[in-house]
Image (cartoon, rainbow, N blue to C red):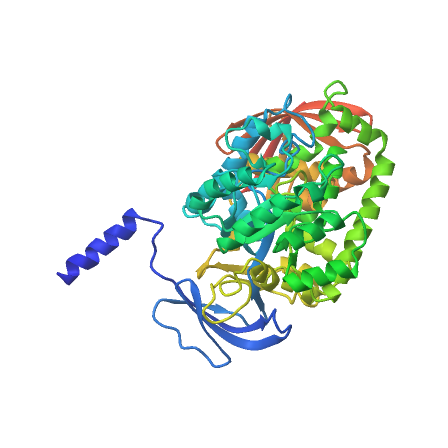
Length: 576
């Protein structure tokens, strides 16, 4: 009888691949960074069973049978990081917010929405690859709940926490005709109650208000509705997150009952009244520093080409950020033309805004306010996963310490969302969401890039094999790096034995080093270098591109046939 039961259990597991036998892991001689005390616990041993940490000790732990043992000698371990502000319904591409820049005549918004849904599992892997084991989607359509309850359960993913549509006194026209609306216009308490009750059966993890204030809609006018939503939220034991970027609006949001402010105050320097309000009400502040500037950079076709974007952003999404270069003057919206004509003024205003945000963040950090790291990923130019280190770098510019930033990225974010009993620090009983690093991030935050391994919910995810890009993605990443003139990112897409031919079989470059020398010289010598893909055909491991290439003032049309093996370009044949 027992034998039959065992056989049935095995068959059940095979039929249901989402169910797996608990993995046991022991990490030996690791240096634990205690984000709460700021101290390093040297040569510790960590035992993990199932999803949780079961033991932490300086004494050697005898592994059980079938235990995976990780040698942590000379390495460092931190809690899995948390992005406390993202939006899955947005991809980060140039076309993802038609209310900000209307390019629906180039990319139909319906296509962009479908693309956003399609790449969610890909985004999951990119978050995990960069050590981000929890994400908070702070507002989107009802399909957010499908992402949390279904998509994340059937794919390797970070912990996903979501809410539904944003409550807002203002609704962009671009969203008003959608079947699944991400931002609902709420002008009465009755409307707020209806939306809240519609959302409640889906069990939102928190609630979000887009507290937009204008001359026509002053914050004081909509305050009673915000207060009403806060009361409904707290009555149901949920946290209230609020978008409020003006000091007056942010103060009103906190007085109304906000638990989390998801953006910086940007219109002026904060005062002591605001600090005391945050302290008194135990409010978490998410500075979200880079998102606004990224809109402008994308509109100008001048993204930063940060190494994280070139290496880890979804290549198709990142490609779109230079698409403005190929849009004809007739197709460019008026607002974009105005920005181009007033670029200097825009950049000066952007720099002034940065200065205010940095000073406000430093002052709040110095006064003990709970600060959490959040990117607002999904907005134009702020790409899922790859934007996280960029946000951390911006926080560093404000002058706060490495430890405070690491806390903001782990335990502070967990505390802000009421999850510090589950995630955010390395403690017995908590989820085994862990990141093993080669180097110490307290010494240099760039060491957060020295990831050796990621453990998610007690399972080793295998960072080296986590992202398996398609041949098309590999080729597009190569094009992105080419346009960025980044020789390292460009060459990273090629195999060591790369061969480049002129059609049909005339070899022009043999080997990676020769190729590096040739292209490095071109990147340094040629101005206005830009490659536009006119057409693309994908055939198995081959990608055929019709490329329109600008070299200074000259233009060239070429056919490139790429062959990809093991996620690297191994052969290119050019037809000129």
